Image 1 (cartoon, each protein chain N blue to C red):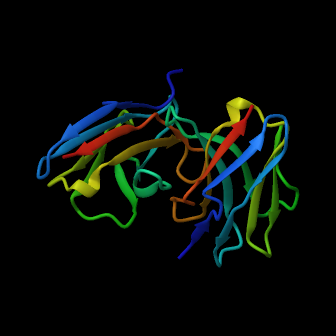
Image 2 (tube, rainbow over the protein chains, first blue to last red):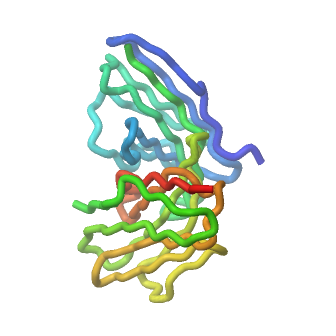
Amino acid sequence: DAGVTQSPTHLIKTRGQQVTLRCSPKSGHDTVSWYQQALGQGPQFIFQYYEEEERQRGNFPDRFSGHQFPNYSSELNVNALLLGDSALYLCASFPGGFYNEQFFGPGTRLTVL
Amino acid sequence: AQTVTQSQPEMSVQEAETVTLSCTYDTSESDYYLFWYKQPPSRQMILVIRQEAYKQQNATENRFSVNFQKAAKSFSLKISDSQLGDAAMYFCAYFESNYQLIWGAGTKLIIKP
């Protein structure tokens, strides 16, 4: 079992560009959450996908969007990148529709120059 | 809104000694979950221990135990027989019916050999 995987590991972009981050959930998991973790801070919830729909969203602008595919993998898209978007982006998955232990991937480190 | 507060940015402990990390939270809900996660330099979030609010008994996982005081909204983590591998950032997190984990700012734990 590969666990939760994320790609790429690191990414460098410039302001105004767009970026797509990818997440493959742990086998048997159908729910994916995305978190943004700025340096030295705790993660902040971006949104959660369940049954290919965005089920809940945190306090992030519309520049942040996502998608979940039929195989439960997920993408996080960020448009018009700002310097403040530089962070570690974490993906977590769990089985079932409500609560269960969330398993985290290693994250994608995004640097915006 | 629910909040999680970790008042200790950094803690240090001698190897083999015991250390307690503090966490307080604010909620009006009666049914929720609380977690301690560990984030080593590898960045991957690892679940250390969890507590269901409806359970009065404090959770224990080997050398890790919690002191859950529901009325005081306090959830501290005790690490016994500290080991060098315990060195990491420790995050307290809260979860209830709105699907998202709410995180504290973290405590950096340093183990002195």
